[in-house]
Length: 308
Length: 262
Image (cartoon, rainbow over all chains, first blue to last red; front, side):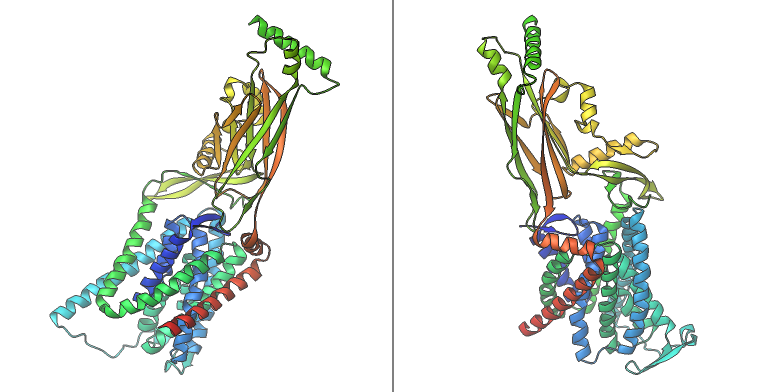
């Protein structure tokens, strides 16, 4: 059965969309990740214009993260004060991200930017994850114990504008959280991702936040930042396809439930290697499409006509 | 040969004589559907353009028992959407990756252009007429801004449009039955642009276009498709807020349902 997507202006098979939503939902449930970095490329591979894929994914991630954020909040796993600081940076980030996005779209370079951003981020994150999980497997085999050292004071502790975060039991400068929030905001706007894969490690290794509030706080921030990206893309470029977002979302919610059950049965290292391989695979496909000579060197567009 | 000339002369004479009374031929045309509505299940559309030709001229000649063999009619059907401006971009390899480098702005480009005829156009219509009326993919009246290699871009535009099934030229999709009834099957892909389409029908005899007819065909989104599209483009700010509210409520609701189930 075909469904016509009003903003993307193309007709797609609804079962393909549901399968994609369900599949990515399954993976995100299994790995505990948002799935935006898999869904956006998948949409692009199936022929959705990259700009619409990115903006629509931002909208879908708002929905995907809000129930998680609420669940963590009920368990007391959200540091609201830290969340607000991160959101502050994030909203500024999405503003600049959406501005870059709109400008590049008007000169016909937004597809290139999306692909390059994916290749760079998926390549580095996937590579790091892969190496890290191989290492920990090797460590586990050789029976080596990782030494837990008291964290060293670094230049981050020397930054000004310190603020007390009671929930996280921290007294740190707001500069770093704002910067992290802003980076994630830019990524949300130009890549259609929640940015959890950047923010969670950054909160743990850079901000040294207690792990029990990391996931909840990051989901809390992602909900607002992707909402901001959705709003800005709607205003600037009218690229948010609500119909597409709702279809993907419905399937993703169901997939995530099943994925979460399966994920419990698998070992952490195996999961990480699996996820890393998947990330690298998407990255390779994106890179391949950039390098290989396209069948058609010319493309037609109605966008950018005014900007001449 | 001589008889042909004779008939032509006779027909011409008949034209002059009947000038004040009636047209020589009349053409009645219609479409199987007078609008295309893009709904949520839209996956392209097919329409039939059909018509009948009344040949008063022939009948009157026939009544004088003059042979009319060789007096052939040809029909051209052109369907096109409202012309718009488009940018054509060209990729080049830079540092190993393919990047849009140059572009060319084109004006008055129809987003949809399909032409069909009873025979290849060159067999019955002069090149100058084809160009003047914009008949045939090579003769679409596209204007462009100054630039190098404009022809290359124009070619690329047409090639792109053909690949998307938005442009098509065929010399056999107009069929004539009993030399009176004709029909043309029109195919519209799902990626067709919206707007006011025009179907033009030309009746050609002896290299002259003797009758031109035109039917309008509005193409528009309907139902939820229309509501969503218009909302997004006319009230982008409210649309953005709506999109966020929809996402948050669907997210909360599905989270709630999922919790109940598990």
